[in-house]
Image (cartoon, rainbow, N blue to C red):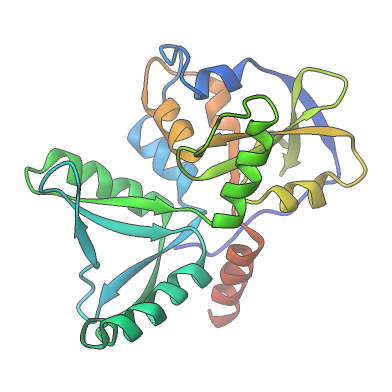
Length: 239
């Protein structure tokens, strides 16, 4: 499912963009990818669900209605900690479930199927709390009254002196990386002076879905957390 990943290039470039306002709620009419292209964008990122021995996900009822909601954890450690806590609070249930890794692309497909079904299952992404705190710190610098971050944070960088998005070269192609960890981004840019900004993953996926086709979105690259990259490497070693 996730047999290979990227080799980082030391070459950094700049590409101009008005993307941020769009993803935070502006006009999405000029942007779109097909469902297959969205799955392709998401499939390199692992997420971690909680399921029983038959593969049925652990669900809760939505507060808005009767829809079933399951968690897709960005962090494997957070998913494991959730199961361990469940074993303490509800041993009968906790001992029947386990952490199951799937690709974010598969979660997207399942959510599409759940949306079209009358009593469908939908997955909600569970972010790492540390990254939510980092995201809020960045946004509260401009809006001190902000109390919550709406989803899973994705961090990206602009040049400190130029209003352009930092890109990275992968296999000869310039891509715009969005990181699930702020510190991971800073590690990759090294001494390059940048401004770190943040958007919700859910906003990026919405931008993928809506409007007409835009070539820029085919050049987006989601960079899993360092923890998830280690998980992917462990999969490769087992094969």
